[in-house]
Length: 187
Image (cartoon, rainbow, N blue to C red):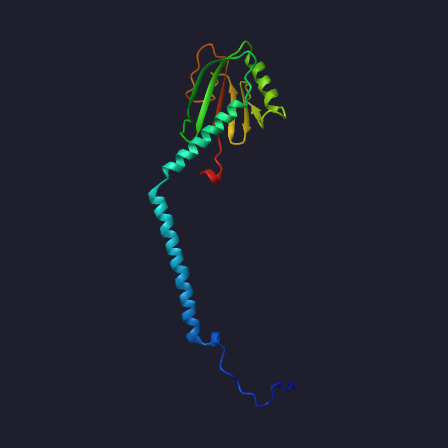
């Protein structure tokens, strides 16, 4: 048996709810679709105009200055081999031209394995300014370390570790620094 209607048997239905009327629902949904569609068209148009315009030269110059400062700051934290003499240096860009690079040629009165041992000890030191030694080459003529975005290579100048690097004949080893990873915020 059905429960009795609490309002009584003589209750008349009232006017239908506003949203149940098709004449109200269709225009409201159409208006919402129009607003969302127009917003999407504007967003795509703005994005396309940014792509057409190209990179902002001021932002690109600012980024380059930040990356060069990172390399200079990292170089200042690297202690040279005791008694080593700087014989040449070069600042510029990587071979691909994507990041700043700095190479310094050094003359030292020690063989390369002793120099690499010195750098491994200095860079692995907990007080070593945040450097993390990544490894050495199989030939034992290269040491790689990282500090944030900067990669450091200590290598024999003739090892071919840096394309285009030409050091004077009296060079014992070279230190090369470059930015190797650019975080998304700086792209």
